[in-house]
Image (cartoon, rainbow, N blue to C red; front, top):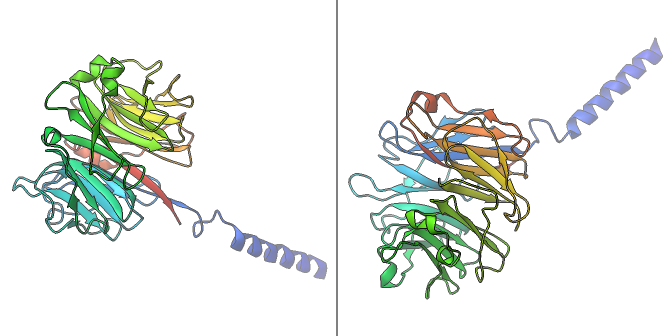
Length: 363
């Protein structure tokens, strides 16, 4: 009997040691936290937040903090510091908002140092190098966590263009893309290597004879190493440069259709996931020579994609037709299978459109 008691005690103590050192427990495991942004409902912009990988979502902000805002993009600086951009309010006030507490409260960014315009895209290298772009050739740069903004001028011929997205390799090496140039039918692409003092226009779409693009616009640009990918529509175009923009390729491969390519996520210089209108989700591991398509049981315009650890994927979609609602879907196996994470708020309010989804991993 005494030996049995000693055995039980040893087993119990061993369990305690094991359980205290277990790194997969709820107190020690990594957390996937994310945000999704979209159009207004109830007189204020939609910002949804999850602390559990998308299992549950809460709405952040209110009509006083985010009045009549329509958000097109979000940037996560860290788990506390967030920036959202979108269309101007009816009174003309710009919609660039910042949160310092993980989205619990929001304030207008920049103390009105911005023009009252639609700002559509945002990008940050870090908290001291942040850019936003929008209508009327607008590019603004912040070096103080978006407390103030400095305008970066572009040549007069581009000052009426609508810039949609911006990305930077460094504070000097910056790429901007947008809608059709006001003086021709080709979507605008600009590049600077001196922080915006001088700009060069490139037109790889015309060079590659992707004529469908004359009906549309750039809807994304991303960089990984020396590889630059740009996407848009019409024609669901995807172009790539392997040499920092010197030469470009049409990398649609086996993709077809004339809808929009809305967002792209790069895993490496040659690996990417792409989302498109009408439920399109696909990936490539050979720089766009071949694409694998996935089925997430949605006909929505898939507007945003976020990926963590190469296999955890979230997408958000806006209604692609009548009697549809926005959706959030999640895959834990790199896109093979999907589960629905759509909160009831979106099911009950089919006027809410979702535009971008972003996730980070934190302790």
